[in-house]
Image (cartoon, rainbow, N blue to C red; front, side):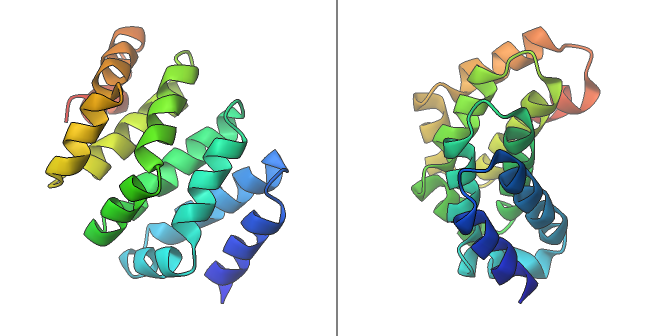
Length: 155
């Protein structure tokens, strides 16, 4: 019930960045529980998060929360495939390219790509073809002392 309500709010308030940030943040917290990951996908959460990232490309908070929730959802292999099919790789790479100075976006974007490519050869190829490797390398060069980013970027 809660997940469905959050997804409905994301859809209803798609043009309001603050609502998108909060909705993605709420899904991020819920996606920390493995059992919720499939439910979020079933309720349309993957599509809603990707839409939020597309609708608010310059809002750092939306980009951080959106990449973070996609990272968690990708820990479910079916979700990982669905995220790629719905354009999730493109929006994560775009966030990395657009927000090079923001270490939070860089960290969560690199983590999302790491989780989306784990045990998924098709996503690895797609990430390379769409400029993901260059975006990760740029993040590592821009933020060499940020430990978590370096771990995610090199994984």
